[in-house]
Image (cartoon, rainbow, N blue to C red):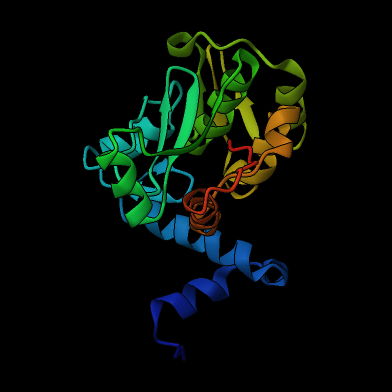
Length: 212
C-alpha cells in the first residue's frame, strides 16, 4: 500500500501523535475506531460497528450477558445449553455414522459450575462492551472489577460496567481478570483440536480433553 499526501488516510495518520507510531497496531485500531465513529457507526462489539438499528441481533445476543443458549448442529458445532457445553464430532463421516446409529454425534462436553457461569458472563459480556447488572443479576466480582478500574479498562456506573476505549484494546487482559482457575487451565477448542479428537474417536481411542 502506497499513500500519497492527497489521500485521507495519509492526512489522518499525520494528525496522530508520533509517539503512537511506536505501537502501530494500536494506532491502526484507534484510527479504525475513529473512522467508524465519524461515519456514524455505533460500536456493537469490541471490533464490530454498525449503523443504528442495523446490527446483527444474533451476534449481540451471543456475546451480551446473559448469553443465549445455543444448540450447534453439524460437524464441529459447539453448543451451550443449561450450564453444559459440548462439541460435535468434526469429521463428516464420523458425524454421519453416529447419527445413522441413532447416537448423539457429540465428541466431548463438560458441565459448567455456577462460578464458571458467572465468569463466562463477564468474559463474554465485555465483548459486547458492557455488563448490565439490572438485567443479569450477576454478583459483583469486586477484586477483578477494581483491578480493571485501576488500569482504566472499565468504568463503573450505578447498575452497569462499561468498557472504556482503552479497555476495548486490552479486552484480552480484561477477560483474564475474570478467569476461574478451571477456565485458565482448559483450552478453547479450535478446528484442528476438534478434527484431531474426532479422528481419535473414530479409531476407538480414549479422548482426554477439557473444553471451555
